[in-house]
Image (tube, rainbow, N blue to C red; front, side, top):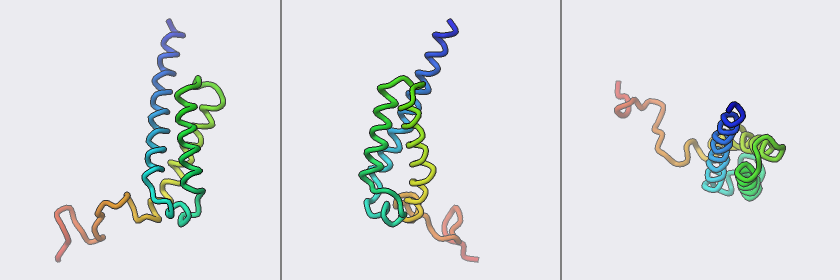
Length: 111
């Protein structure tokens, strides 16, 4: 009973990590190619290959083996290091209007 619940928890964690790697892969796919060079990071193709392979490895192999752990680490490096640098280079959150610093919740402040 305890072993079965342990494996069901591991299965849930594995699916969550697969979704995490898939999110990172799609995020890398929709970033501009020149932003990687401007942020002084590896190329877009490199990150797409690493993230797609890590998602595939996380899905196909048992979570407690070494390759899925390496895939999770690579995905975390992209999310923690590369993604914020790309956001900073491209001007924030991917093209949404952010407004100026004097904008309030209902428009610009005219005091």
